[in-house]
Length: 104
Image 1 (cartoon, rainbow, N blue to C red):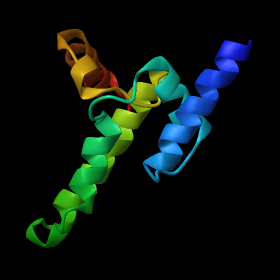
Image 2: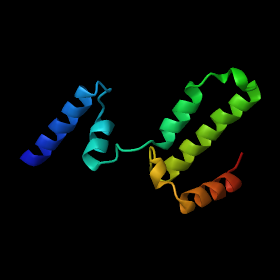
Image 3: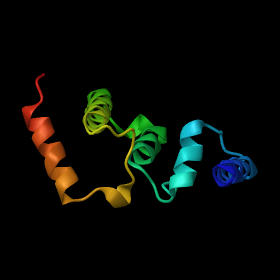
Image 4: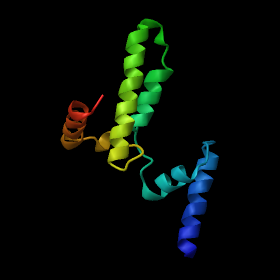
């Protein structure tokens, strides 16, 4: 029990040192070693942070719809997020099936 408390304290200290927002999810990610590499949500956020002056309004709407479908798909797999390194052929195939069979 003491070891777990020390690991939590260390993860908290690392997040604090990096001046990151400290959440329970981030501490769990640190403990599980899942904090390495970009995630699907990171790439979506990066995309939306870019200036949208080059995209038509309809295209921007389609990007938000795609994000919603991706988050619904992840939720169906009981995931909040996924590291890009974990996206494999099966994930992409399952996503394709989900999108084709999704009711409007």
